[in-house]
Length: 274
Image 1 (cartoon, rainbow, N blue to C red):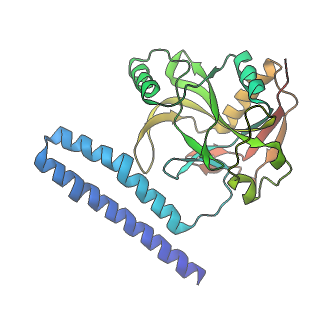
Image 2 (tube, one colour):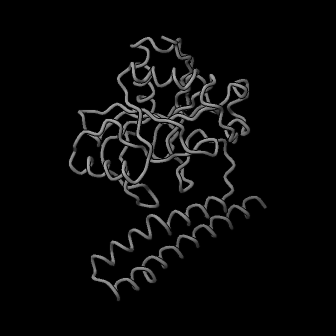
Image 3 (tube, rainbow, N blue to C red):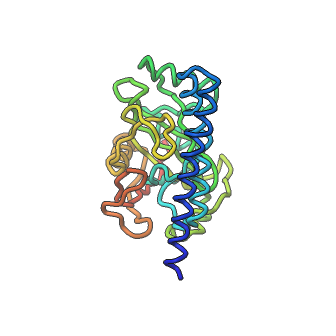
């Protein structure tokens, strides 16, 4: 019975995919092509497909599959797997900001119209923007609370960066392999000592997201190396204590998450007050 249910779910997801292709090609593009110049028709079709139709189809497909796995990674606004969680720091928001500032990292600007336009311009012209904004990823049912970055070769196209979500220390004793840990949506106050759950990756250039083909940064698949780089930067400045590795769920020696390779290990450390 379970196999039959799974088969029916996959058939329904396949049907959604076929319908989305038909809608994009034979409704959106065909209608636009009859009313607009070809280049405008293609641009309009891409915009509607990448940012409206496909994201909604993906969300519907995930609901059909009823994936109830414990997340080892963040979620994009389209409901797709995002960056793997690979670092947790313990301390206050002020300690977190001071630690990364001491290590030479910049706090990312909030994503908005002005910062987005500045980022696009900097990306195209390859001009410096050390506080460039991040796209929004979700964990604990909410977007990141803060993010930090370190440019590579002073280019906005390449950078080390990490997003953080605050989680109350009341949850520190919970099993990280339990769904309740990850499905908690409570946001602690800004002045208390908390768990800062982070997802760090390295941007390497220009790319398109899979399934929806939205414009985004390309990222290095080795998130283990990025975790080690961030930890090394903080340890070199003596702003964190001893490191402990925590295994989230079962080990994924060659597991892939959104084309990332991760060993599933999360580095834990306490921030040191200077």
